[in-house]
Image (cartoon, rainbow, N blue to C red; front, side, top):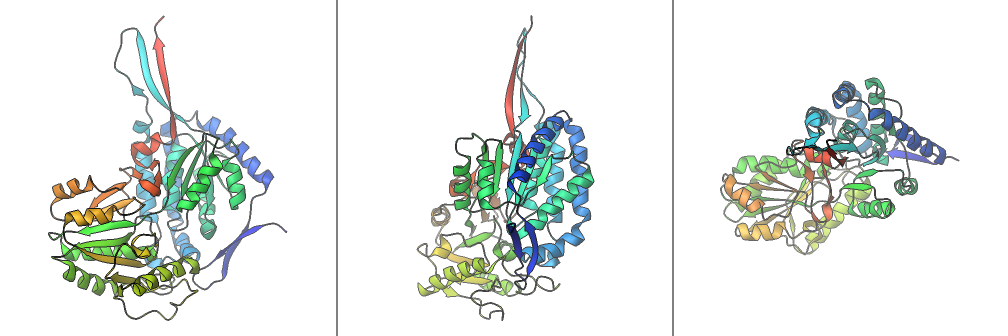
Length: 460
């Protein structure tokens, strides 16, 4: 019997969709088709590529009304948020708009008798391994600039959100991209690693766990393929005494609980200056009460189930451990469906914490946040850096000069002031420490998806 992958919906535990895993010959054919397509695509100008990719974006946006409930069924995000349409459009159109300049040859200073420049050549065939938590946004970060740069793309989407890959494939067909340039494959882990180690893949972009990133590195060892890895996170926030407290409360509640806390750059730990700690916690808890858990297909639901029960149980375990060690939980009543073995998990706020507790050290990736009191900037910076991860960090203050100064000492890929949980496509998306390597978006994202080639031409 052929191997299949099933999407188990977090809404009710039903099988929402089932797809066959690609066979060995199908994978080999996909690689060959990608190689042939990218050679032809390399002759297409960047301006012409932009027309194709703009049509792709149009095609994806046109299907949003169908995509939104699909996402709710696949990974639990409430329909009230309208899917990922806005972010997909912002990121894709920005990368399309800057492509011609970012990919233009870099001319060297004039030198008598010579012409010199550095060109940006496609890497070749890319494999994009996308996660389920923001299945369109994380994929578009690599797919659109990868194609704009002249590469072919093979997408392996997370098993929880397989239908996203199909939506991309449909939009590519509508946009009229050359056959084989983009392909969506349903792969198991073993075949994914075999493909990566085949020597026929030139770049791998992976978004997922730290252990998943290590497996990707091992699979690619010896192939000399380039890697882009966005892995775990434990993003901190620091609220200074001069912060706009109502704004900080509102935005940090959103940053902690949106998408059931399943955000790469979601806020998982908050440090608050002692002068404003009590007022902040009081406001935070009151605001968090409005983040009600329920069926994501219902319009009034703000927080849906986590993508799988095992993810919710991990967060329950962290929360229970913290409480056993002296932490206090400030959110009282639970949703009736919130029980061990269920993906439904009520948002929780913890105080009286320390960094010996897993909830303040290990990635939670769920709707729980710890709030700690700090005496000053020094203590806040020390605690923010006390983590193996470094994706984003936010500082809430009226003094942006001080924020910038503190930011230079925070071990992170992005420093925010007075906002959080956002990705600006004009800035490179990157991380430090165990959060990964490489960078996506901005002109630097194109540098990571191309190979520099020097031209040194001497007149005869």
